[in-house]
Length: 173
Image (cartoon, rainbow, N blue to C red; front, side):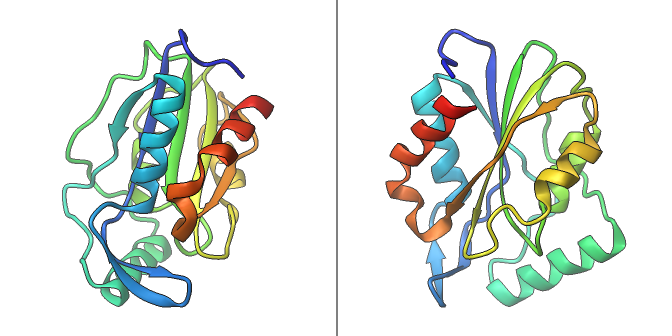
């Protein structure tokens, strides 16, 4: 798919700090999903928007995953620190880490605060073994008016070398 010249937005949520990577906890200065989002924006010429909750997640891995699980179980929709007007965009490339098998709750907050009717949505996620989880099904339920294409799961610890996989995915969607 040729996206250069289209009204395309890469909207993403990412977590820097402690992350699980190949069986170990590592400290990331930049989250894996942010790295992937920047790669995709560079390839497509799309605008970038980072989905940031008002209350940030803990830096420590276990505390972060516990907070994410609590939000998932309660169906929380965290308030976001900022927003973007998506009305001028035809294509939204949506990125997130796969947390507990789906999108982090701030991504649900972002989705539910906009009208995606008639938009093409291309999801991608970073993970350490779960792939897309059930996030594609959750995405389709959350924004039923959008055309949601098959997502791209990227192994988080390999995301810096993922430009070939990204190009292949973009060409196939």
